Length: 157
Image 1 (tube, rainbow, N blue to C red):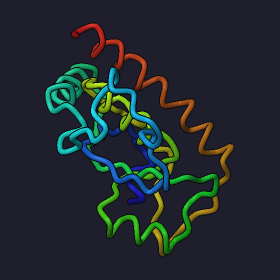
Image 2 (cartoon, rainbow, N blue to C red):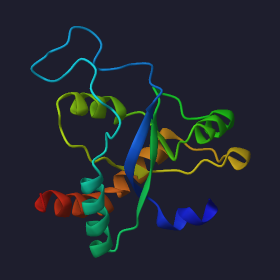
Image 3 (spheres, one colour):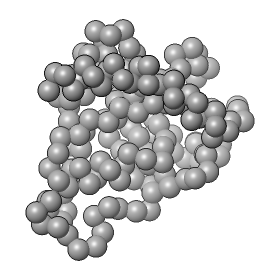
Image 4 (spheres, rainbow, N blue to C red):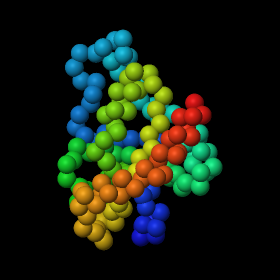
């Protein structure tokens, strides 16, 4: 919503994802030493790590949202109709990274915590023109929130 712009950039702990990239990093011959061919994906994002991140964010005075991340292939940004569709599918955030890396991490048996920067909010009936340069600039500002949060989380492991 419009009121979120005051909090930009937002940071969100990913609680689940939807892979709409059309790709999967586990295609091809399986490396059994890395993990099973069909890893369980019922709880990809570690609840204990999310809780730790929320506590550290609270300690630091950082507003950490929770939500479902949808991975898309890009490189274009979403249309109003795509935004409506993704929201109806359960998306809280959309991006062109993270999902494939997380699938590979789960395949390797790793505990996963993903915290993403929300760089713009799309309201389908009032979409604002935005360039990728603007998105990247806002993402760069997210470091001021993400770096201390990640330092605290990693320091607690």
